[in-house]
Length: 335
Ligand code: APR
Image (cartoon, rainbow, N blue to C red):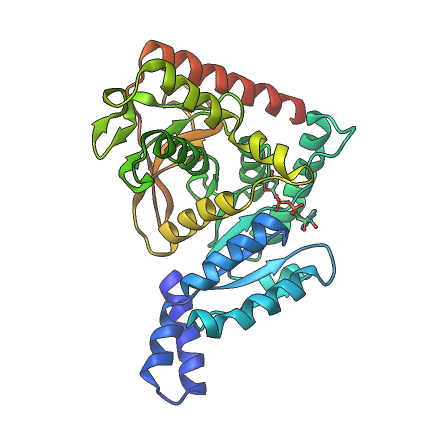
């Protein structure tokens, strides 16, 4: 289906550009990514996708003018990035039709006087509406949910979409692992490129950075620093989002969340089959039933192609299940 739609699109553009091999190649390769929510995370994700040259982007928002303005600005940057990708800003869901990937960043940030429960219900309503509208227009699409509380919103998106769980997933673990890698890199004075980390569990205070699977160029982390320093780095990772909110005051992080989302989009579009920590549907593995939670997955064109089950020690098991219980509790509140 993916290749069919690329070929049809290719044929149309081919007829417009009278056989120029450059345009034939671009037409056959380019995919369509719709980003729902043209706020900080959404617009920055659109930027990264467009700059990569991998896909055209539709930027959707309920706010009038915002997606149109940002999309035009992004499209005007394309000549400077030497890419032929374009961005279309819209308030009309119809424009998202036949997307290969749909990224959902729409929602409300927490405001003064708002409880976590208020945010949960308000964003669940947004996700329901967005998924109902987009799923029917992109029956072959893959959904990536970014809106918080992400693991719960991903479950809502999956339920509403009626899609197979392989095609719905949430972004959280890549960001948490990137923060952990950054703090380790700062502590050791070693490039973050050489640091590998996995963070399991919910994308929240109860995430579980996996020290035993964290390495520096393949060497276990505890050969570089002692337990106390590692536990400080874990503490900072768990508070990574809050640390940025405390500086920004009126918003939350968006550069690293968008970069993490882009890594997922790229893995899907290029069928990279990368092993990345994502919120995926776990139903039996890790002793967990019927939950979206952060686990390492193999990510490719078909979506979540496999969940990798890591061997956890007793402490890690306990922390992972505690994290799962907190997601279950929030799910119950909206069920
Ligand atoms: N449909 C489409 N867009 C919507 C809807 C809706 N029903 N409701 C709100 N939006 C849009 C807003 O108009 C706004 O442009 O969602 C956008 C959210 O953008 P920001 O407030 O800038 O939030 P952002 O920082 O991008 O974060 C988005 O990602 O990381 C998470 O916690 C974060 O849940 C938040 C989400």
